[in-house]
Length: 323
Image 1 (cartoon, rainbow, N blue to C red):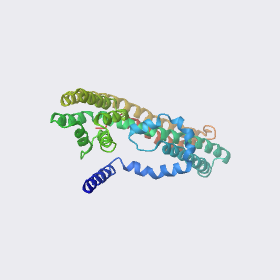
Image 2: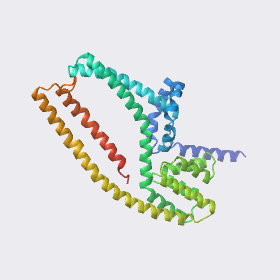
Image 3: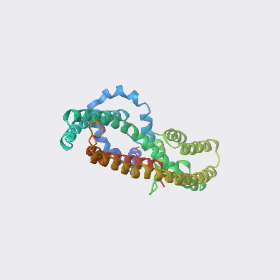
Image 4: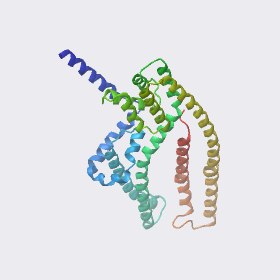
């Protein structure tokens, strides 16, 4: 009996070591653990009143694969927005009055506007970050679905049990995007004691990819009916390859449109604005309101163009396939 308990204890320790092993997607979570803990200690239960405003945030966190506590993440959102708002309200008037010789009253109004804008932007950034990560993970899953189903089809055709298929998928040396979902399946089976069907159903409800969800539900149906899993996965592989060819053609067409937009908005547009502001400065124009032509030119050069370029890069990244 003692020997049995020793073997059981060793197996549990080995499982805990594998589950807590450092994975490529564990570093971002570790980097945010301390700020999340500090924000939760500062706000605590006071953030509960704001949680109904973020009804979809918890679901987006799960779909993005971010292992953050929902209440702690909401606390970090409001604490960060409060601190950035104070920083903007303090630094903006000083910068405008000292660097650009703006009257302090006008600079103070700009500071209040900057504080409100920064607060809203920070809250929106924290809210949209899981949405962006979930969408990014969805595109990775969709782009690699052909490789995922092809790998699973090879193992299934060789007679490998479905549980072993997902375990092998989770332990690839060069992991696929679906390896994260496969690790969740293995964790639910080995750690929480679920059967293969319940583990697949739980993973299917959390994955952001509709195509992968259909594939997992198809695997569940084949297991239920006792069908040939290898044939089903080979059919899924062929369908995924056809969709991948179509998505690559669609991306090439959208890339041509984005290049036209880039030339019009980020090359020609700023050049015309710089020429217009420069002519206003030469002719002695008063600018726009309290903004002189020199200040307008500085804001356009150091804020307007970089922000527009960053937005364009985000749009380009969100529309590009992750092959």
